[in-house]
Image (cartoon, rainbow, N blue to C red; front, top):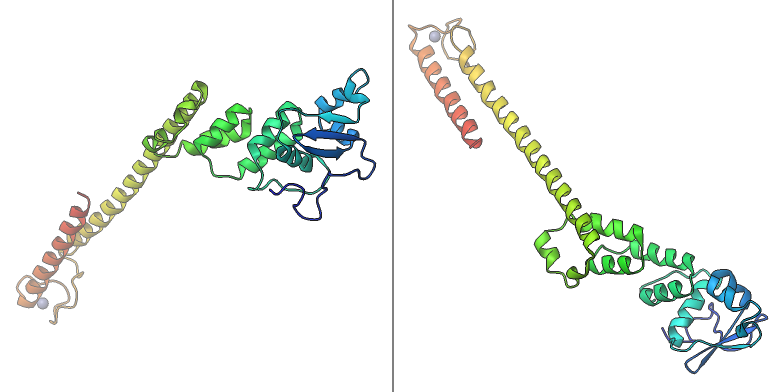
Length: 254
Ligand SMILES: [Zn+2]
C-alpha cells in the first residue's frame, strides 16, 4: 500500500487534524493521532498515556523498531472508518501489533478475515502462533478431509504442534470411518437393488408354468398347452430370455 496515498476517504495522519494531540514517530514518518482513540483501542496505549509516564506529557512518541507502513495500517484499522481487512493488508503484521498493543478487537477482525480463506497448513501455523481458536478448529476440521500423504508433503507440516497434530489425526480417522461407513451403505443398497431385480426375474420364471402368463402365442389355447407346438415354442423362448436376464443380473453383482 502506498503510504499516505491510498484514497481520499482515509486519514493521512501526516499533519495535525481534528484536535490530534500526539505524534507517533516511526522511522522518518510522523503520525498525528488522538490519545483518546488509541487509549480506547489499546490497554497498552491507555497505560502509556497515564500520568507518571513520559508519554503522558510529551507530544512526540517514538516507536522504535516499527515500520511506518505497518503502523499506518494499524491506525487505519483502529480509527473509526469502515475499512475492511483485505488481501492488500499484511494480516500477520496486524496480528503482531494487535498482540503487542493488546487490541483484541482487531485480533478478532483479523481472525474473521482469515476464516474466509481456504484452510491450509500455513493458517494452522498462524492460528497456533496467535491463539486463534476458531481458525485453528476450522482448519483442523477441513484439513482432516485431505489425503494425508499430500498433507504431510506441505511445507511447514512439521511445525504443527503435537496437540494440534493429534487433533488433526483424530479428525482424519473419524472422517475415514465415516467415509468407510458411507461406502458400505452404498454397496449394501446396490446389492439389495440387484438382489431385488434377480428375485423379480426368478418369480416371473416360477409363475409362467401352469398359468396363462406367457406372451401372445399366436394360437387359440386359453393357457399353456403341452401338446401345442406354438405354446411350447413360446414357453421355450420365454424361459431362455428370462434365464439370460437372470444370468446378466447376477453377473453385475460380481
Ligand atoms: Zn397353444
